Structure formats: C-alpha cells, structure tokens
Length: 178
Image (spheres, rainbow, N blue to C red):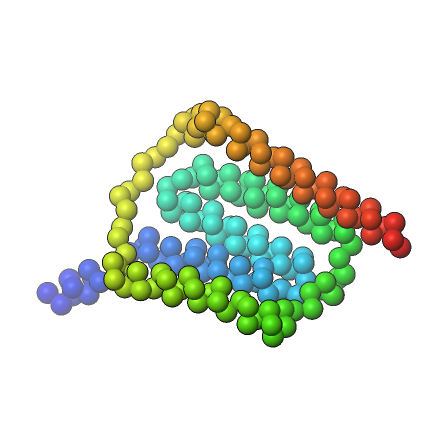
C-alpha cells in the first residue's frame, strides 16, 4: 500500500513538463530584464517566447504554439533585432546604466503586491484543475480570427508597422546628429 501512495503523490510527466517550460519562461525573462546589452536582452526574450510555445504545446494548442514560434520568435524578434541594429546601440551595453537603488526599491512593490494578493488566495482556495481542453481545428481558429476578431488582428499589424517606422526614424535622427 505504501508504494501505491508514493506513486499517487509522484508528479506526472505533464507537471514536470510544465515546471520545465515555466522555468524556461522565467529564466528567459530574467535574462531579458537584467542583461546589460540589448542584444542579450533580446536573446532572453526569444528563449522566453520559446518557453511560452512549449506551454501552448502542453495545452494541446499545437497550431497556436507553431504560430508563437513563427510570428513572435521569428518575425517579431527579427524586427526588434533590426530596430536595435538600426539605432546603433553600443556593443558594450552602454545603454543600460542599471536601475540604481531607487529603481530597485520601486521594483520591490511590483513583486510584493501581486505575490501578497495571490499567495493568500491560493492558500485559502487552493489550485483547481481544468478539464482537458478540446482540440480546435486550425480552420475554426482562422474563422475566429478573421470573423469577430478581424479588427484586433489587423491592429496588431499596424502596431508592428508603427514600431518599425519608429525605429527607422530614430536611426535617421541619430545619423543626422553625428
């Protein structure tokens, strides 16, 4: 009987995979926030986005996971790297002097407030599981994106275009100042 109790308390492969992908997301996020160089910060963001794609795979949303890799890891990351290159950021990471003591002190409540809210709620109500998500065909997902969510889908492309145009303008302003 003891062996079966230990087996019941052992984490499942899905839980181990979730912890693995969540760790990838968190490690990539820490690198993205703390890296002294913009290029290294982008690499941390790319690692984090790959971890999010892994979490989508765990949710059985293979199409969304592949789109995460294709759009965010591929296109958006390349766009941001081009923007960094166009602005001629210093290779030594001179653009980040660090947050200093005041910045660090301001960041502490940003961690403590959500943690202080979520931890008591989780301890009181516990963590409930969800039913297994139903598989959604890519055709139904496409119909949803191009049906009621067409405006939001198109606004994303406008935001990306504005970001690239802003990066080009910054690059030309820096060149004109030299």
